[in-house]
Image (cartoon, rainbow, N blue to C red; front, side, top):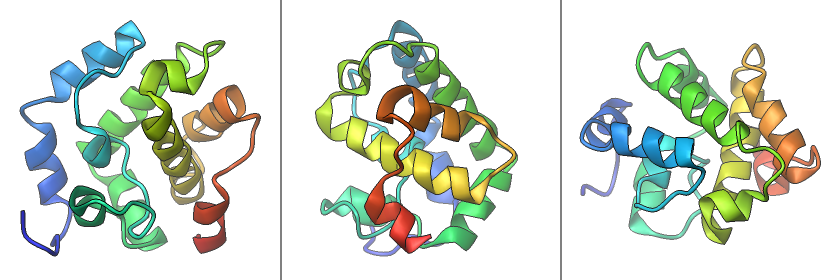
Length: 140
């Protein structure tokens, strides 16, 4: 994996072999495999791993590009809707503790980047008492 990511193509490349598995896991209400970084991205600098840095979104402009992408945007919204279909359960029970925090960061970022998509504020309301990720909110 190169140190720097150029554009959004690496998200497509990473998602291609696993997107059906991702959607099936989310439909069942239990994330089991490793895909969080490139399906529910968060701002660069929030995660410490090499993958978190590589797939980290640079800022609000890149998040808007992602939210307007003809493939990535519908996948992100569909994945978010599948998580939301399990409202009433803790996010940690669906995603695991670490990835539940990443989901909150992602929802905060895309609530700002894609205000027309109501699923992101709905995720924050359903799983985080409507409270956005403070680190993400401070940077967008």
